[in-house]
Structure formats: structure tokens, C-alpha cells
Length: 421
Image (cartoon, rainbow, N blue to C red; front, side, top):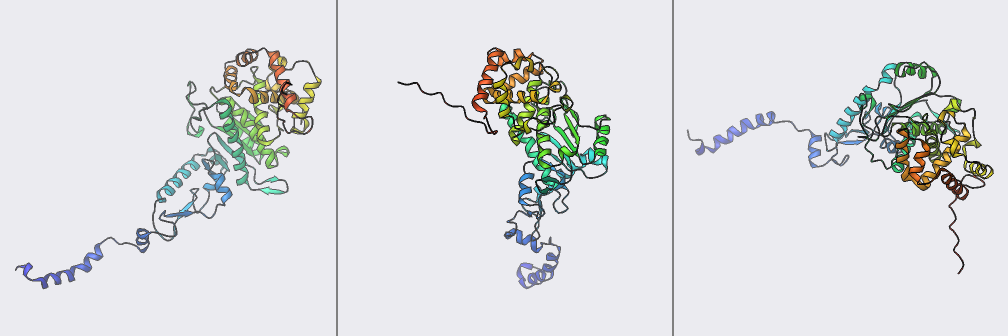
């Protein structure tokens, strides 16, 4: 039979098999059809912003790498995105899925939560692994959520790292890796400026503080603990002195400064090798710059002073340098950080303040010299090209020109008057 001559037969075959072909063809949902023509709700992204996170928190989350509090969101899993309820898949769907997996893997690696058997509020930034397990903290009459507190602390410590980047001319390469991923590099020579991330913890419970000290740091101490140089770590229990958000922020800012310089270029703390003036100057300077006062001690055991002029030092330093003519620097540059009293640490802050303002490019060679245990007198002479007595005279003259007689706002040095014609 010739089918070409029987078109009616072809129509019969088409009529019989078309329904079957349609049944066997892949089904296309109405949602998928809408994606093809464009989903107006998500604009073809396939995702929508998670409504559980306010704009202010989202801006802070963008400044960190991971946040355990955000990761606990049941809707988005820390990706800050949810599936569009009017379509399936889009340009951002894969991004959302990959971020969820990345956050989950990060969360699963946290040893502290595994050890304590509960969630621990922690954040990872470029340079820090932070735990702020304090609950809400007071700011004046308000109580600030733990989530907001940990992000404010993260902002502060990363600001210190940014300032050091500028002052020391860093390339921004480091740190090498997250300490939780394994040991830091051994025997390397500044492949990266930093060798590990700084671990900083504060605990509501002194029992938790002692617990993690014993487990992770092999220490039976119940007081503040700070280890500098290799794999820096700082742990403290929340006390009366650290019960408010400003106090905690200043505490972390101050100690972050010490930790960062101890891990830079070489994993070595030099505060006990006659580099105390630089170490103390750094700790107070960055705390003072970020918070406009300094209320912490560089080494608590080394001082009986509880406060020095309420943390506002410019006027006090100017008056002291005016009143006391005997040189300070010869004795100051020989002292270890832990042997200085708070008034001496304030002088170190002012001296570092002068260097930042007038010789910032010399900070890196000074730091490298201190790591090599070069005597401070030699370091200052080589970096500044003058004697120690001339350096002290220049510092004192600058203080008189820039520190106020009242208040704490620095002044701009007066321009020299033009000679008469």
C-alpha cells in the first residue's frame, strides 16, 4: 500500500499517536513556563531576599566571611536568599545553594560548639575568629542584641587591621589560612604578612572560660588569658569591667592590636625583649584612635593603676612633658610591656602617636628590627637618622604644638609666621 497516496490514513495515524506522544513528552510546570517568559517577582533570579534579616544587619553581615547567628536562620541557612515562590530556578539559584553548603560546612568545623554541646555565637572575618558569648550588652539605657554586639566588635578589630595595613604598608595578602583548617605554615619567610587568624573569645560564664582554657589552651587559669606570637589567642570571662558594649569593644580593639603585630612578618612577641614601648604604644594607640579614649592595660599584672585621667590623655601628657624636663625615652625604651605602669604606657602611646603623625613610613623597619631583637636605641637612630635626645626633643615639641591645654581634641600645629619685609 502506498501511504503517500492515502493522506486520510496519515491523518488517522496522527490522530491515534499524538495523544500518546504528548503523554510521553517531559512535563513543563506552569512555574517553569513563567520563567521562560520572565518572572516579575524575582526578575528571573529564582531567589528572593530572606525577610528574617533587617537591612542594618545585612550591611554588617556583608563585612564578615561567616556568622553563626545568621547561619542558624531556618529560612535561608545563612545565604540570605530563599527560593522564589512563583518560579523554579533562576540565575541566583546555584549561588544560593552553594552558599548554604559553604556555611553549613563552616559551621560544622567549629570545635568550640562541639566541645560545649551548644551553639556558640561566633564570627569569622579576614583576620579574626571571634566569639562573643555574652548575651545582650548594655549601651546606655538600651540593651543591644548579641548579634549586633558581635558585629560591632568585628568592625572594630578589622578597622585596626586596616589601619595597620596603611601604617605598615602591607599588601593585604594574609592571613594564610583559618587555624581550624590545620597548622599554620612553618619556617616560612613572610610569604604572607600574617600566619594565622587571631582567636578572641569572651564568655558570659567563668566556668565556660575555664573549660575552654583547659581544653584548647592547656591552662588552668581562670583569669584573662592572652598568648601572642604564634597562633595568637585571647580569652576572658565577662566581668563588671566588661559588662557594657563600649567596654567590650575597647577590650577587643586594644588586644587585637597586640595580637596582630605579634603575628606580623614573624610569629614573635617582642614586648618582653625591650620592645615594650612599641608594643604598649600600639595597644593604646589603636584603641584610642577607634574609640577616642583608652581604658585598658597592656598587661594587667604589670600595673596597679586602675585608670589614668579617665582614658583621655592629651592634656595630661602635655602638662607632664612641660613640667618634667628630665628625658623619658632612655629609660622607657628599655622596659618590657609588663613592667610598665599605666602612666608610662600613656607616654608610649604619645610617642607612637608622634611617629604615626610624622614618620609613619618608619614603622615597618622599626617593627622588623624589634622582631630581630635589635636594641631600640639603634632602631630609632637608624630609622629617624638622629640621636635619641634629638628624637625626644622633636616629640616634646610636637606634643606642645598639637595637644590641648584643656579637653582632648588635638590641635593643628601653627604655621610659622612670615618674616616682615
